[in-house]
Image (tube, rainbow, N blue to C red):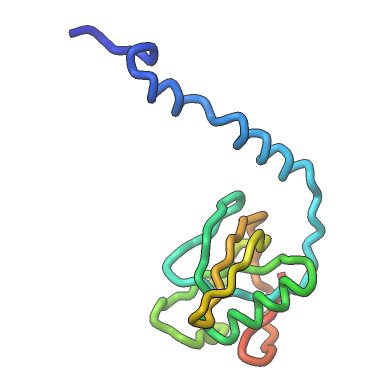
Length: 143
């Protein structure tokens, strides 16, 4: 039994080269300049760290988080995602949220019958929270 190169295992060859669509979308995203405002609505996330260029769905149901999504959708669709230190906290304070997070763009929203909202976000760039600003049930952050 000899070595089986990529020509004998086509799935390996396919994985070695990224898809053309992925390359194009990354290039287009890098070319497109998005101006990030200094103050953004904050969406604390549980049990996940979001990085630049990641695209992921999030289910949102807390009052402060829904407020942040509504605010982002009403302006430029940009939101700041930061991980909570304890996933069990229903209403995290500023001390319960990590300072390093990701500026993300809300690509799609879907309102569910149970009152929650499913959003599709894409991470744009890393950011650091310099100040928390309490607004109603949620926060805005200065990055």
